[in-house]
Image 1: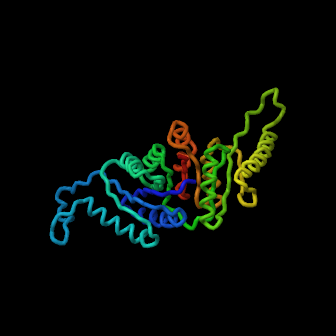
Image 2: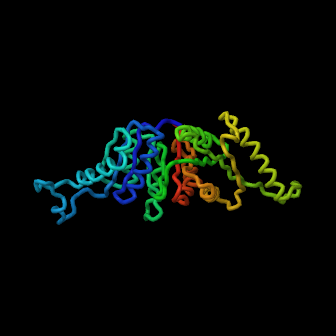
Length: 297
């Protein structure tokens, strides 16, 4: 996993900012960034008509809305983040649409991680978050309202692809910084269609054979990382719901997972398909467990 040197944290001027900042403060302790940009995007920074009285300084002079918002946010960041870690940070108040502004700012600042809130009840926020994640080269950390620390258990969805390898490498590095937190490698497998005359095997036998195959595949896969089942727990389940994301969501809650780590590569066509299926569905389902989507260069 590439070190997160430059991170953008998207704030929204609601009570959720406090939860996001508290979680990110703990996340910072294991990632050691060099620069953090806290960003709030306002649709219109003009002072509303007849509201001049609310925007006056001690000398009675008007205070621009962006400066007022920046002052409030800076104090919030100092109280909940800056007092805990000596990290260089900026608070930026931008004008525009959140999607375009955050994507542009992420590119301008060459950020390698974007931190977004993932709310249970917020009209449109989930759509914006997914669209941002789908269109950026940066890694993305989705933080739900009920996120808790410390991080003790990490879940890595495994499909034995390069994406999964990227996620596993990232999870191993995070676990090391977390004093060897537990990692669970989890695979959701499909069972081939049965019933053809030339296939003399019933459905139950197919499932049993697939389970045996997955056990062997996991053993071979872990050897790539010089690991075994004493250091990484493995689990697999049949895709009986025909919905991989739903299985991941259910398993994460059954195991009390603290962070889900997934992998993607860049933001080309393949990634758009990935984000449009498993990862994007999981973000919509998972409103309690943080999700970290990693990308290779």
